[in-house]
Length: 107
Length: 122
Image 1 (tube, rainbow over the protein chains, first blue to last red):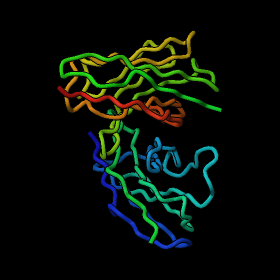
Image 2: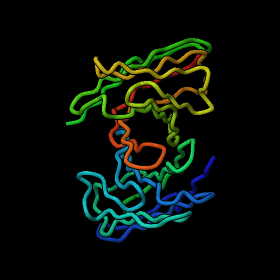
Image 3: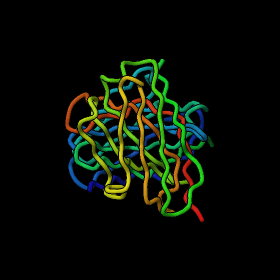
Image 4: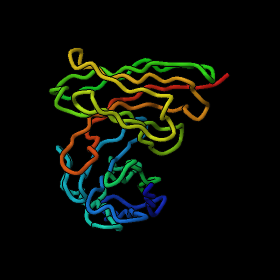
């Protein structure tokens, strides 16, 4: 199965700063890569699908890029409500797999 | 708006069985694949199972194959997961999610319920 490695494990930034989260796949997943946001006590929410497409209702400060094995989720200007764990997921090959997550904290 | 409400979780002994349900509303249920995804306490996410929109095709993670059975009732707009031979490692919050087949061979889980906790312990 495809292994997704997310880095860093934790990101501490101040409001207004740019957040850059990385997801690396053990083999090419083309652009079949999604990003989810999970706030404490809540279910995951789809942010980005197919590497760069924002899901319905997702603010423009969230953007995704990459293809093949290297992907990035960028939050252009961090808001306090962006405190969460962010997971990437590939749907290129069976079984679909998730990365271990990046926790975003407000400094 | 899309709403997915899971039920049926609880405490069960190892080797026991449990049936989860998910009631859907706010979208055309029989147009979508559906999925179960779980999250062990304090851990990450693990996909468990998909079922096609018609209910004719099912997919399972190796960790649950042969023990779990996914099904759906399109008339009742409901998704189910029959879990047998439960193990301690099945302890998790189980999320029901709508899955959209936008392109490719695996759908995108785009809307999730709040989850139901399954605890397997003696």
